[in-house]
Image (tube, rainbow, N blue to C red; front, side, top):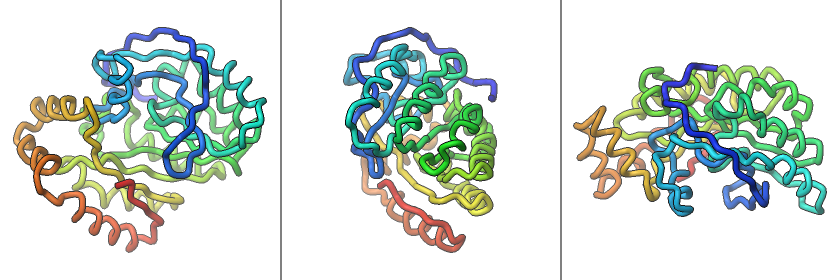
Length: 278
């Protein structure tokens, strides 16, 4: 794994009452989030809005709650007559964030899910998932591995996603997962206007070279708590972009609409299967 550019979060153990939640995301029946909070500390993360609803006002990325009993709770739930659907791992955290290296909750939960007939769709920004590649390949017909890449520029990634793996290590995750016989997909998002949109063609070239199953594109979602984080980041690093962002998200700019047309054409020209989340 890469050395993180983010400060180490405060980690504490908590108990959970349930492990699987119902998911409203397309293609998922359930979601599994072994942790609350995330050490990747991405400036754009929408999950901070859910934390705010639950009274967590600390800076996003500064804390991680470890659901220390989640595997035991999941084992009980898996024995019930639940439909053996698709479990998204994870939707409000990154299941392979740095704390997973020592706590191994994701690894234990994946084993329980797969042994009990569930399908799993993993989405991560961490190369730690490669630790579990042998386990995932054993159940390869019920596993997909998706990686999020917002930019292939290492320095930009360290500023935007300070605790996540180097983007080229994420590319390696897709390559090795594909070689292991797993279904792979690439999540390109959120696309940050005037920051990451210039490198999208290179990302699509990589997707084509790796023969990923699908590419998904998403915009920046201004959920509660996101704009304060993004505007602080812009003010410190790209102050000239603040008025442009205000126009895109709170004015009449059609940035994402025009981008959708361009990306659709570029993905099609490369023979890629693609979809938009916006």
